[in-house]
Amino acid sequence: MARAHNFNAGPAGLPLPALERAQRELIDFEGTGMSIMEHSHRGKAYEAVHNEAIALTRELLGVPDDYYVLFLQGGASLQFAQVPMNFLPAGKSADYVITGGWSEKAYQEAQRLGTVRVAATTEVNKAYTRIPRQDELKLDPDAAYVHMTSNNTLFGTQWHWLPDTGKVPLISDMSSDIMWRKVDVAKHALIYAGAQKNIGPSGVVLVLARKEYVDNARKDIPTILRYATHAANNSLYNTPPTFGIYLLRNVLAYTKEIGGLDEVERRNRKKGDLLYTAIDENADFFRAPVAKDSRSYMNIVFRLPTEELEKKFVSEATKAGMIGLAGHRSTGGIRASLYNAVPYESVSKLVDFMKSFAKQG
Image (cartoon, rainbow, N blue to C red):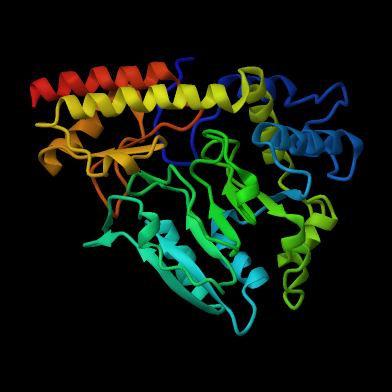
């Protein structure tokens, strides 16, 4: 079959070898006569997959020994509430850096649970076109934590540096750029990321958390919402999304085979540079609204001269096998999501289409 050129913002494409492995093993996993979906999450067959996924995460990201690797559920949206429930005690406040729609949602959810403040925002006329500078961060040295969103799918901005938060714990939502390159895990108290952009299917959330931070978190919240509960049970307190974690294992194993995150970053930069060059070289027709030092390598947004041309662009691209190029309904325009599994050939095809479309337009 012909594979689509998948530019969806999420759930996104998965590496073909990871899917093909799942296809081979779907009915009979390692000679057990059962699919991995049919195995008990407490049985040896699934346990081996689960622990391999944890080990690969540690290896690829260089996760320090004093950090937990957790697989949770509920998406980043549940994390918006779970973070303040665990780490925002009465009498303290937390700082939020607002750089897009998802960081707005995280802030709004935390407001329901405690005292929070905006440490910085780059919003202008309901749009975000850049990441704040360090000197724009008005951080509270006594804050319970600082929360940031590393990549912004709606507006196409991305942090290319980590803010200095002093002694205040840093928490990052990396749902849309986890494992696009290496990250210094040790500079964070906690990282969370929905899997469905870069490392697996929807339904799995990866959490990396400093053990001391988790162990000292609040204990007056529901058991299942405590990170410590899942840490004590190796993410097996309740039935986890076993097939999702199995597919995540497949993706990470493939990532290791191709050379790890250094190779992943090389490929991602090559793809992103190709598309941004095509936009910049035809600036009379395509317009990238994001400041160059804040441009995302995961979600590249751009505009055409009119909304009518944008609709035509998406329609004709879809007919040519390029899927998911419409911008978010709240922002409009064009958005090409170049997550890890998007091949260079798909971006090259998109660039050729853009050049042809611009000549016609």
